[in-house]
Length: 359
Image (cartoon, rainbow, N blue to C red; front, side, top):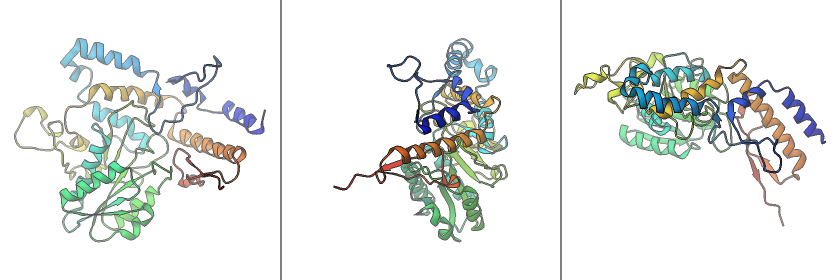
């Protein structure tokens, strides 16, 4: 057995999160060995299925929908699910209860948050700064939001943000983790810089929530959005979420006012009056099937020792060990890590670029 293999066995034996594996549906690996263990490395794209989800979904379909039918809006808690599940996500992103609402896609929530941020910034500010390296959809939505609000769009890299801010800056849209390289951007420092310029910041947490500490409340983040099908294991197409800092909720003006965010939703009034609190981030009827599957998936965080801190520590240890293995087994110059080596700059995964050998 190689030295690295022996070290891997020791690390596995001492892993405080090893027991959590049993809470997920995972394959057994190759067909060549019945006791082989499969290794799933695509949680950054789609989280594995928590074992408790299928039974919960069956109950939602057969009993709550099939037997209780419309009574489930009250008796099964369907109506309050967006806020209830938001409160389950809140500790995972460092937020107090009452500030997160679950529903719609990440794209829709980015749109709501960014236009809402421009409106919060007020008159005299007509520029939106966006992460030039962002996931394409965020850039598309930022461009549309700029047209809609009469703002100029200014794409810059996260490192350039402090120098790009000024009296005209209304809102800044940033990614916590770069989806291509796994680089972790400095949320506290960048948030502080945006606030010093008098602007409003919107953070996209798709590649950080459930994988590493975020600290939304601690660092005074204004607005944030994120998906739930990656590190939160909500399932394909599971609903996203919107965070609105409590002190901004009474002024948050969503560009998508729907009957679900009305102060009196069943009044069916022609004039819109926004509800109080995070509820005003809702739009239409909640997608109950996928939302309640997400609620069941979040139960994996209820176990003793399953904390964001523990997950982050293991993530960094795995990445460190992986990079050591690359250095040991791959010929020098053939592979280069595009993910930062420093823990403070690294998200929850490592990516390597393969170099073509010179001829």
